[in-house]
Amino acid sequence: MIVARLQMLAMGNAQNGANQPWFVSMGPMIVMVVVFYLVFIRPQQKKAKEMANLLKALKTGDRVETSSGIIGTVVSVRESSVCLRSEDAKMEVSKSSIAKVSKS
Image (tube, rainbow, N blue to C red; front, side, top):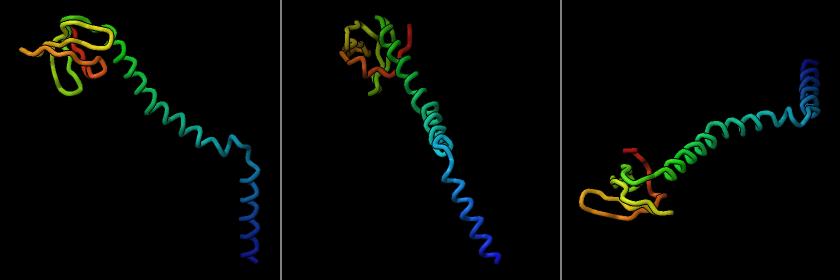
């Protein structure tokens, strides 16, 4: 008798879950996507936008550090590259390799 009642309760709960609207069952998935966007994607986009603005504003005399670790002073700026002077060496690097900019 107790087993029969437990089976009826279990079947009743299973039927109630099947009648839920789609947005109730998809709610946790939607919340996860929103949290993922806010935690991972949005900050990365913001950082990329700030770096693009720094590279656009790059001018002669700024101190920069490349992603390979070269630290130098900007001698000239071209459309897609920058000419750097580091101690006695003068080199041309692409703008995409610049990791940090220190305004002088």
